[in-house]
Image 1: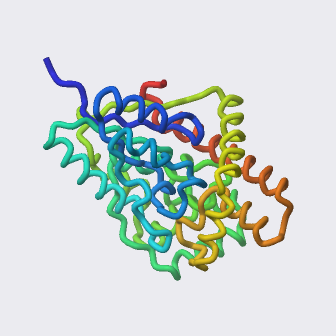
Image 2: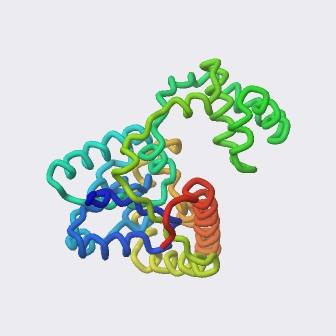
Amino acid sequence: MSQPPSVTLLAGPTASGKSALALQMARENGAVIVNADSQQLYADLRILTARPSPDEETQADHRLYGVVDAAEAWSVGKWSRATVEILSGLRDQDRPAIVVGGTGLYFMALTRGLADIPAVPNAVRDTVETAFTDQGEQAFRGRLADVDAAAAHAIEQGDRQRLVRAMSVHAATGRALSDWKAATRPLLDPGAWTGLVIEPERQTLYDNCDRRVDMMMDQGVLDEIDRLLARRLAPALPAMKAVGLRELAAYLGGQTKREDAVAALKQATRNYAKRQLTWFRNQTADWRRV
């Protein structure tokens, strides 16, 4: 009789209960929990990103949580290499793993592969950004469809970043981004993992998001953000783009009232959870729902 997969991929939107379920599973089977949340990588953002608490981290072996300084920038590729190395070591030790988080591209890198796309020069990306601004999304999307119809069809309305990325890759390499992706191999063997998605009812998810924000405020998230802002790091760094940082920084900078900042943070969190929910429904339709 074949052994069950040793790696569980546990995905879902923010505030859906992923971390709690992963911890419960790890306590039951001794699995190692591996972080698949791009913001929980950063040491400076424990409260804002709802990283597992120190007490929770003592209840099971946690990896890749708070291991990166906010001044660094981790890519999907860097996370993937670190994760594959961890999973390989655990397999050699015959230990199960639970890879848990809400960053969909991390899961896609493991299960579908990571395209080895050449770096896009800044000048090319700047030119494409200007074209998007000048033409507007619909005209720009039409131009993208001429060179990469698959990307133009797949990218959601309003997702400027991915539209610009797809056009920039074609402009720099002469090859469609979707073609680069189609030539990839998964980093995990298909039989080596099982996928689970936590998919709460939408209003329940939104209520959870609001409660999480209230907890963050009680836990001292403003002090955490104040310390980070004092470092005066480059705004383009991934840690400086964390959901909620902009809204609370506006309050700390005297640009808005506290209650308005909290309301804006709740809205931003709900919007983010909605995008994640939609993404996982579209991209992981064959994974088991929890």
